[in-house]
Amino acid sequence: MKRIEVAVAVIVNQHGQVLIAKRPEHLHQGGKWEYPGGKIETGESVHQAMVREIREELALELGESEELITLDYEYSDKHVRLCVRWTEHFEGEARGMEGQEVRWVDWQSLEDYRFPDANLPILTAIEARLGA
Ligand SMILES: Nc1nc2c([nH]c(=O)n2[C@@H]2O[C@H](COP(=O)(O)OP(=O)(O)OP(=O)(O)O)[C@@H](O)[C@H]2O)c(=O)[nH]1
Ligand SMILES: [Mg+2]
Image (cartoon, rainbow, N blue to C red; front, side, top):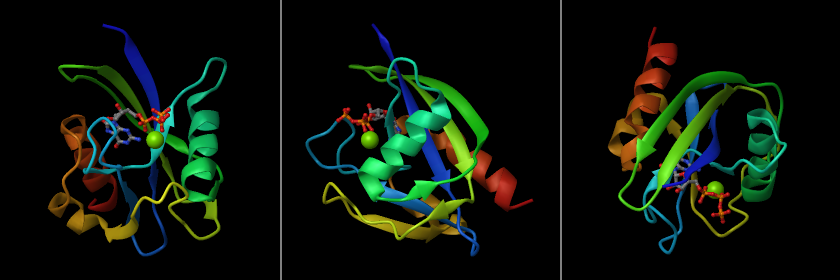
């Protein structure tokens, strides 16, 4: 099965809150919460794809970012590589441009939200950074 490469953004504000969005019901893994992002297009770096997706989905402008974790996961119907980056640099107010619900969540509360199965290592990586 083809593996799709996805740029994923962990966006953190000055209060240690992380921005999450709810995936529309009709999409793959719909109804669950996600770190915003989307598919990397040909010729794009992960950072570039992430900046483009966050502009499209949330109307936020991201600044510099750094790698957090890269992980491969095989859903029954889809294989994904999540290239997850970390940024504390953004301008604007997050809005769900595609009608999706968007929330800033204390990092300690992330475990209360249902994310796609692939996501568990991302939570561990966030906790390692913010909980240290
Ligand atoms: N954005 C995002 N995608 C995730 C996460 N976890 C996870 O398994 N995925 C999977 O990665 C893929 C990302 O695709 P997407 O639907 O966001 O892609 P996209 O924004 O380019 O949308 P499109 O399909 O309309 O082009 C989906 O299969 C989704 O289920 C996550 O935390 N954030
Ligand atoms: Mg997306």
